[in-house]
Length: 179
Image 1 (cartoon, one colour):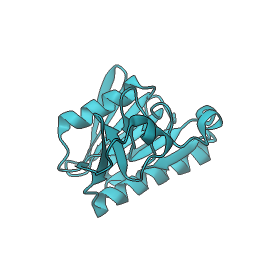
Image 2 (image 1 turned 135 degrees about the vertical axis):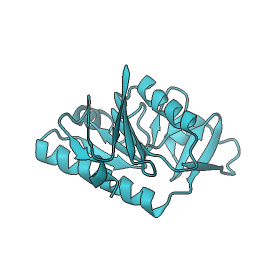
Image 3 (image 1 turned 90 degrees about the horizontal axis):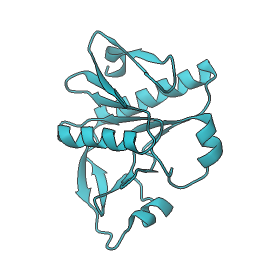
Image 4 (image 1 turned 45 degrees about the horizontal axis):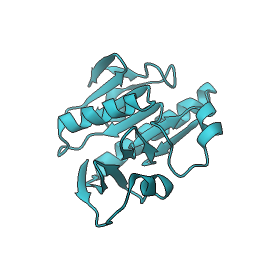
């Protein structure tokens, strides 16, 4: 996702944690706006969120699914495109403005203008801050990368992508997700 600097002088990470402005992240000491979301990006984001929501309900695993919701990593303030919070963490943090750690399961829908290295670093950041599994969804190349602590798995058109550690048992055809 392309980011644009927002003109909020002296906006700290603590400010972000207490009152995060919509569609922003706090990165490297600056508040940035998440920009250039396309219709396709929004459609995939909604679809993945709905799939996770339906699955957590039908499987009885509970928890909550969110879109564009703020969390605090070890060094930044982030807002994953789609995120899942376990029932235990909902009970503990369900009413805070910003989750004080990464979500156990997060997804980023990668835009054509995103730099690959930055997207992978963001996934690593989530994993180092309490996250257990990160999905990187590449609509243009029709790939989904699932990253956990010690491995990354790639799924392409014609394959079924599935969760590895969180929201156990969920799977979806890459073609259905990216349709």
